[in-house]
Amino acid sequence: MSETLKVTAEDGHAFDLMLYPAAAGVPVLLIGPAMGTPARVYAPLAEAFATAGFNAAVIELRGIGSSSIRAGRGVDYGYRDLVEKDWAAAVAALRQRFPGAPLYLFGHSLGGHISLLYAASHPSEVDGAIIVASGSVYFRSWKGVKALGILAFTQFAGVISGALGYFPGKRVGFGGTEAKTLMQDWARFARTGRVDMKGEGTDYEPALRSLKFPVLGLSFDHDTLAPHRSQHNLLKKLRQAQVTHLALGEKDTGVRLDHYNWIKNNEPVVTRVVQSIKNNGVAS
Image 1 (cartoon, helix red, strand yellow):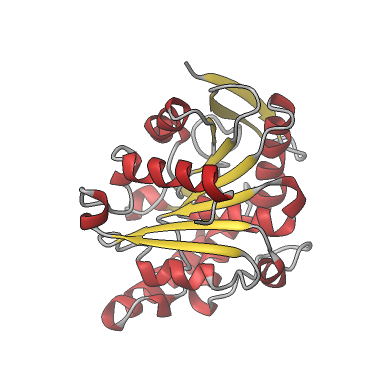
Image 2: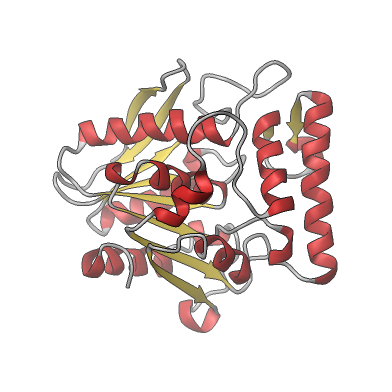
């Protein structure tokens, strides 16, 4: 049975943590969604982890679902706000709810970016990280015409966000209504390959290079939005971490998995994550 934890970030942003508890003392997974994706979409995944004996919580992204704000002209935020405000508040809430339990960050797509950035800037607060269908959006992670398409679309997203004051994702068919700075951060990442995010605070590139705990990555043959090479390029930023990258195909999973359908067809992911945490923290 699920619970709802009401969380308020330091700037007053309020949101829900969708919680699926298993037992006190067992590992906790904080699941971070993909861009524009409500927390409720991850209910089957969280339920599967709870059934496997892990506590699971899904954070609501700023501007989505239960979030108290909506992106728009004059309502802006970026990667740094998600990392330093929302993920920080969610981790604190879970530490209070499950004192002493190991805490792992689990991120999908954008949620993987934010999870790794939080882990890199607050390594003492978490015990490991898992990213699934998440990779560097650097356009050179793709090849040929696809690479040019990624570059063109991401830069269009940054430009249109600057012009309108927000990104009209529902109208262009990608993401939701997203904040200007979030999309400009994303566009810069795609153009340069670096996580140089707007605002003062942690320099994330050296923080990622210094991260030393276990990180598990899972990517899928049929994921065109975060292909194997894309995830490899993100994980190679973690020069001192104990990294395992599982590049999975249909022969490994028994099902054709892509950027989104793995959430419901989650047994191959849940099995590997649970086994890795039980055996080695997360790296296997």
